[in-house]
Image (tube, rainbow, N blue to C red; front, side, top):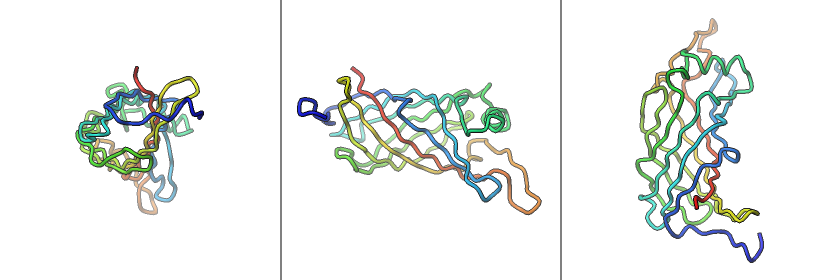
Length: 190
């Protein structure tokens, strides 16, 4: 960064567009009760409206293309897209719409919470994302960018994702707790 291109500051309400090529929407779940399997969704759109002086007025609206699921194993991905899990033909999107933001995010490192409605497979539940503001920067092309990280846990059965198989030795093939981790970069909307 040069002195002529200082990092933008969050001082007024601003709208930002999710940059899916520089963001990671990742999940992890236990497989066979012993190993953690991770996957991510590669296609998402969304906006972040940020009001740093009144964080409660900020909001997040994201839509994820479920067909973009990638666990590095095509056979598993096809099963996850099937009616056993996400049923992509009937429910092609996962959505998250914030209902409340608690805490401030003015300086890099600030922690806050995003409370919102997560909809998976037609079922909506309230979730709380533990978030952190990573900062802003002016990119080499003159655009402004902002970055956040967030994480939460859900019980997949709460969203109708109930498929499983019992193991002879006890336990099940797929764990019920799903950890969600987000690395989000967004560009300022002109």
